[in-house]
Image 1 (spheres, rainbow, N blue to C red):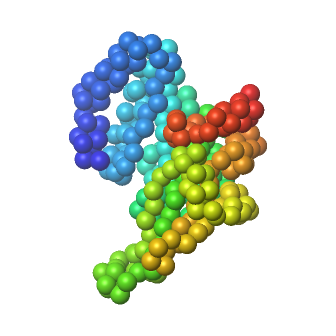
Image 2: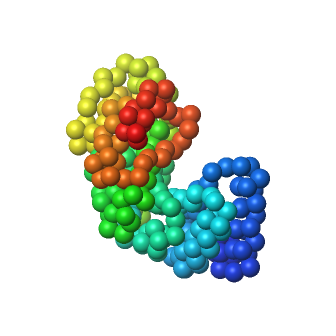
Length: 256
């Protein structure tokens, strides 16, 4: 975040970066540029939005499409200024995932139905639908919950973690690997109608429980349905190679 501020807070450094990016894009013969700057600090917000303006102008002068990646809108990230982004960018991409992430204190879906739905609705307050792209996850997290020891409870005193009784760890898995882990465990998959995802859980060692909310054709179809219902410009995904082959037929059905 400090490095980003160091670059973006100087006009000359922004210009230098933009020139290099445009030159590289033209040399590679690509169709456009997707900007993905994360963990930007609030003090950097104004300079970041200025960078978006300047980069968009250069992209359009050179016939390059320009899209910007964003978190799901929350009160703490308003300085990304989606409304201003939408004036300049061709597309505003919402990364509709990481609802529960690597550092989460509790197990949960990476992209449950309501999280994605609310993210789209919040974005549409500031951005016209034909400029909004909702990104979906091709990955999920396998969670492991273990009851905390007395020592761990003592260590957590006074921190946010103290209100959680379980110690939680997780790993990110692509669709195929996730399905494989469920099958190896011999776990039963049931439909979680709140998250609108297939869900499985099973017991591990040391009183631990594994939980997983799967991303697959069923969960993705629901998210793509939200995209279609809201007349969005399209979808994006993170990340290539984590999907199973049937996913592309599904996306094709909703995008065209």
